Length: 339
Image 1 (cartoon, rainbow, N blue to C red):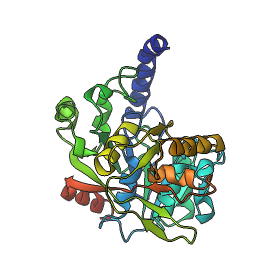
Image 2: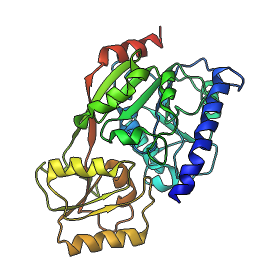
Image 3: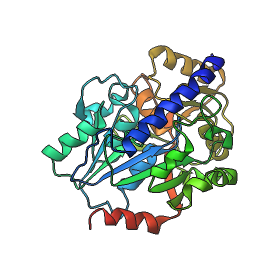
Image 4: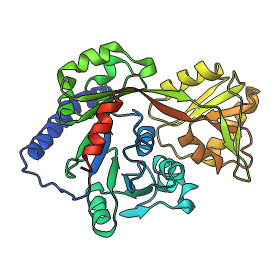
């Protein structure tokens, strides 16, 4: 299989390069909207922190009083329609409407979140039928058909430099030269930053606005049956780790640093939809390891909680972004969208 992927890799990257050239030369048609469009994306497969960054961005001073819409693809969701605004009734069904989209919608009550299988058409509908001040497109850097006023690209610094090679050796969606299209580069998860990554990218980043983002883990929390929040004291805990995210190693290491080493860990594919058999296995491992808690991310919690008859041992750990450098440049670019 690896040899097959290695053989197909040059074809994939050549096709991607050709497609980008056709858009650059305006041979392929694009859609330009009257409403400002900000794209939050990345250049690699896997989790770079786009969704928590999108949530963080909505709460910044330059946008906090704006009427915001977020457009998301709802990757691996069962929803097959063209366009849907998420409402509270959808939040408890992340397997149907997208775990990341549901997380954004449930945590940003003043922001409208839409899921779609065609981002450019969805944005056209929003502009035609609504009065939003700005549209944020989650994971849209490679969606070239839609013109954007600001392209923000996240670069995960918690992975090794080898990840920034072509697939299958690395995790790149497209060649590093694609970074030339970006307006703002965000070095995410910078508490584990690798200086070699910044050295590797210097030829593509020297003229870009750059930000450095770290993150803090909050205290393990759970939603009680009466919808209140129960919070554990942040300390070493007797727990097993369950996660289905793009970068499980980073989750494992950060949890270990904050709560001690897990008694066991169950790692599933990103966006995994948990079945009743999965829940039985999780509870079996918890009992076998004599663990007191099941810890997971916010995204995982949405999917696991509703599948458990008794979720009193299940806690999510909030991950909050913090800006370490570059705020002034970002604020300036955001405010320029409305001037």
